[in-house]
Image (cartoon, rainbow over all chains, first blue to last red; front, top):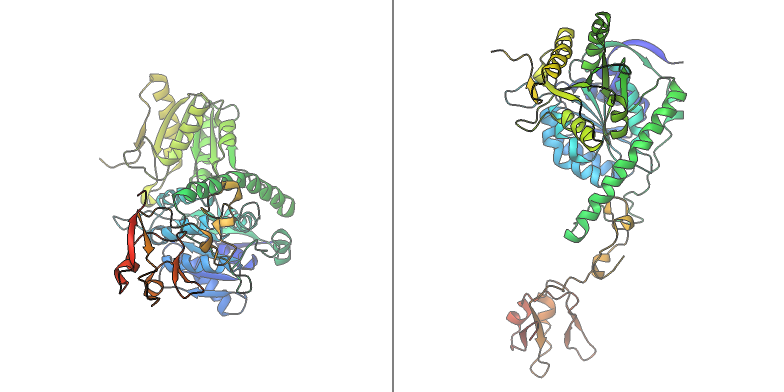
Length: 391
Length: 97
């Protein structure tokens, strides 16, 4: 039986990685991810986890080590955040293109400047087009569960892509939550040992990572895109088998009181729980407001999202990152594309909130819901705005 | 795999574009874009083998008589062999001439 324990989410994440029986961890500490790798290094040093822990000199090296270790057929894990991700980004593209099933936890944090160690989704959005499978957690339990799920998806021979589990820095990473930690045997049943389809082997030499001339590069991107698209079915399947094994259910897109909602808020990550509290209060005041939360960021769940919002007359998308002077924030851009492609045109306003650790409160969500409804009624121009800006 | 070019359908690419056959680059016709080719006058050639030694791309191989012959499959027309030949037996001939 799984035990419910009060545990810091970063420590729980490290325990989950250990339960997943990884072979290699190559990582460099960075706030707010530090406790994840710190605890993993302790588990390896104390003999609780039989794995290689490679303390590298940078995140670029961390991901490079992971590429080598995954190519050799080892179950591989790393974790980073913000500036660390920026340094690692070059190799993240390589890991995905080479189809290496590395799992990474990103403790989401703002990007400098100004130097800011607190939460937003700038690093998540920087990683958007690397071709990784990306999930976004709402709470500590979900971080743990998504780690098991990540290995299951990554190592599936229909996928063989790296998977990134996003957890909001500090808000999740440093929170102590009651978390169900499963037994090792349960995890083993869900996650059998990794069987590589292709690996570096001196007995059977192969070339991993050759040059791709103009006459093959497009085909290489085509196959990557198709595999990532097809990965959605595996992601869903792995959540279904997770449910039958552990009893907790996960979907690409979650909804909360959205079925009859006239106004729908769309969020991603830990602010969704705050938003649910706001929805309860709004419902209590007789306002038909609901929440749609995106859990699977890549491959983007186009149909699931559309199904969740198609009835709404008014939509507010909350982005925790900016695409400075683009049309709107990155989550909103996806939502608008989904709607446009299907000929749907609800009133839609984009709110940029929670940058660099700025709290997004229940009151903020209530204000956004009320404001977007009022804007829609007045027929104000649609666009994006940054909330909570000090004048 | 179309061996001369390496051009295949996206559906036929190996996992992660991995190359499974060691040394298969030798199958690629890399000499298809030269503008000039090296031609040896075997009446002048002294069979010293400098062209073979200096060629960066394995174009030259020794035949039974000891002369060094070109395999244009790989020749990019760089002209190093013509420059190094001590008896000026190699001339660069424009492709299309």
